[in-house]
Amino acid sequence: MPGTCDLSDRFPDARVAAPVFRDFGGRRAFSGRAVTVKCFEDNSRIKELLATAGEGRVLVVDGGGSLRCALMGDMIAADAVANGWAGVVIEGCVRDTAILATLDIGIKALAANPRRSTRRGEGSAHIDISFAGTPVSEGDWVVADEDGVVFLSAEQATEAELA
Ligand SMILES: O=C([O-])CC(=O)C(=O)O
Image 1 (cartoon, rainbow, N blue to C red):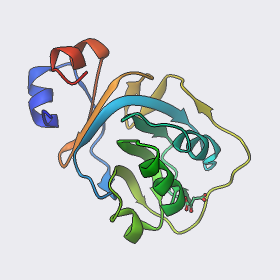
Image 2 (cartoon, rainbow, N blue to C red; image 1 turned 45 degrees about the vertical axis):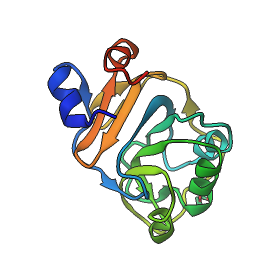
Image 3 (tube, helix red, strand yellow; image 1 turned 120 degrees about the vertical axis):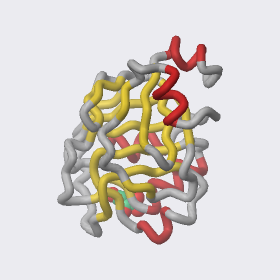
Image 4 (cartoon, helix red, strand yellow; image 1 turned 30 degrees about the vertical axis):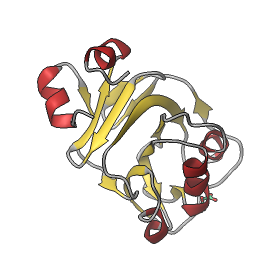
């Protein structure tokens, strides 16, 4: 898989997320088509989606940058692994990080917070979102590694032989 630096050189208009993420999962480098979620301190959509077949995709969550609670912990992340998701990138927090580090999945988030989020059925999935300063649409290609997170259009992903 080409790395984020090579992809950014090759596609100068590739979208690069602001460099504000930490790695929490057992996989540092991962890629896949994006499934989008927008929610704020409510992880209902995240739990629902990660309980369905991931087919190697990456869940991209606009969590509004909230540092007040965690949108994913070890139970939901274990579901994501079992269901074949390649990764989860969250503009928000996660928890149970000692366990997340043992899971065979990519997880990037802003920080850890032990407090759980609410689950009142709020939030939207499969919509255009803003993620760490860049627009992301369902079906974009996500490439993440130690250097950051890059989003490519479907056409660019085909050219880069990712798709
Ligand atoms: O249940 C939640 O809201 C999040 C969590 O802690 C888990 O995934 O284990």
